[in-house]
Amino acid sequence: MKLAAYGPLLALLALLLAGCQASMHPKPLWTAPQIEAMRAAGFMQTDRGWELSVADRLLFASDESRVDEKQAVVIARIASNLQAVDIRHATIEGHADITGTRRHNLVLSGQRARAVANVFVGAGFDRDNIRAEGLGDRYPIEDNRTAEGRQENRRVVILLTAP
Image (cartoon, rainbow, N blue to C red; front, side, top):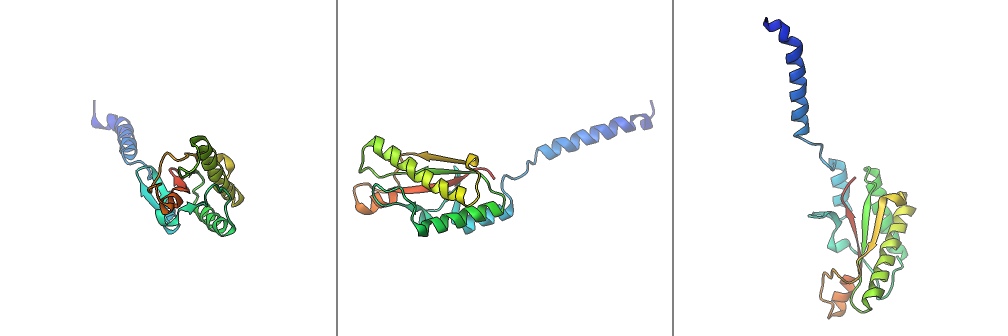
């Protein structure tokens, strides 16, 4: 058989190899504008995804889950900036210190997460794209034996794992 007879077969083989090569280099999860917007909002890349940085965490008073007006403005701006770069999914985790019972802290931390999620929804996020979860007092980041440590533990963290 002459080499010209293999032309269509060689062309098909080249297409298949090109497809394999493309699948070896998957599309990045985040675009450059998305990464820039997350960094500008104070998010930092962690092993869990992009997480709101410590300096910009949302803190609450003891036994409180209401988002004050100043925080709501900041949260709404973050949500709007994320949407502007087509980031439409978020996990919002509420946390508590140890001053209540385990059950009370779990409920309170869930209320905190939902309060922040409501601000995201008010800023245009689809509620179905937000997971709000209360984690209680299980994950302290500071020592609960001091007033300052307890204040740091009464927080909400916004986590981004997919655009």
